[in-house]
Amino acid sequence: MLIDTHAHLNFNAYKNDLEEVIRRCLSENVWVVNVGSKYDTSKRAVEIAEGYKAGFYAAIGLHPIHSVPGLVKIKTDLEEGNFNSTEEDFDIEKYRKLAKSEKVVAIGEIGLDYYYRPKTKKKLELFKKKQKEVFLKHLDLARELNLPMIFHCRSAQDDLIEILKNNPGIQGVVHCFSGTLEQAKKYLEMGFYLGFTGIIFKLDLDNIIKEIPIEKILVETDCPYLTPLKAGSERNEPIFVKYVAKRIAELKNIDYQKVAEITTQNAKTLFKI
Image (tube, rainbow, N blue to C red):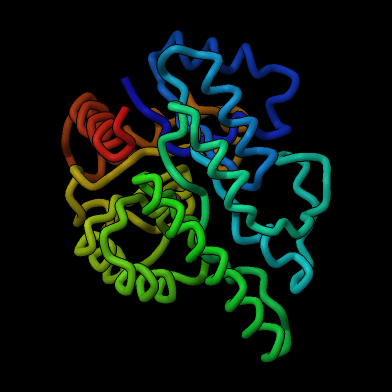
């Protein structure tokens, strides 16, 4: 058994064959946490999860790129949905209502994303300030609901670490970790898990995976993105999380089944499933 702790079957990429993808998950005993990126996709994640007694769960939240699109030019993501990235005010009451579903196991994916940034200093300051404000509102909601968080962080690790140091008591996972070993250790010191996706086949994260304890690792796909080459598919899906687990087993020189067993238990512990 494996748990893909970060998938997006709630995205447009699966609108034509969602049931087939889910059947493949069930046949290979892969459980899935579908993660929202804004209200509509969060709602869809909950709807999918509620359609199954076990094996499918939801996380709800507003991705940082959807809180500041007026300050940066973001390309339309047809995989997510057939729309331009439009600003969405974080309506905490709408998300609070979604969280009433027992299938909601986390707040996310939320965090900081400085990859695409404004060119002027003034706009950059506003860009970062607004993302941090929205992120802090999610922190408040997670505390209120006693839910762990799924952090998205791109080109902003140090800022995220600083915020989390000043807001103790939160549990969660740094999704699709791509920082340094030093940054990884800082997250671990605060008690967070690190999630690894197919990006480990593109970036040199080998030493980080070797160094950190398997008890603090979660496996993810981030599907439909970051497809492992061995999958032989352009579009990623949850069953391909096995390639991430197998690579981790190789790097840590331990049995694949052991990685599957431990990372599954890690996910069950964090998300209380």
